[in-house]
Length: 133
Image 1 (tube, one colour):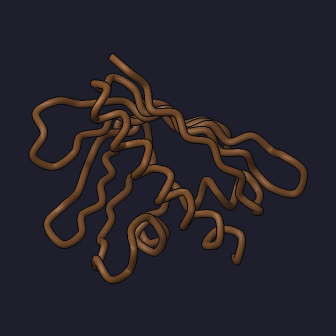
Image 2 (cartoon, rainbow, N blue to C red):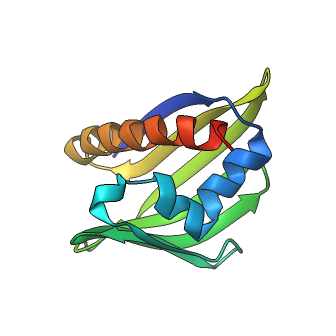
């Protein structure tokens, strides 16, 4: 198994980034491009569910660990897949902003490469979204 590891810096506090990562309305606003008409659900409690769907694609999972505003661990399953993977998101204060590290684990090599590209695209939208609030 392989891990996809993606790092980013967001010009917003860890608390602000946490809200963008766990609030359903905020997830829908930045996670995928608006032209895909994303819809999100999120119950940010341990055992609570979350998911995003948009124009025929999506994923869902459960929150396994929550340590606001520092760490999120989720089970994660792409729609139509028959296996779960795991996402760990670490938020670390860095200057006036937050360093974000996403580790998407329990993946085969090909899926890890695809998810790295997908996460990089999503985090590129998180940076201006969270930093503008």
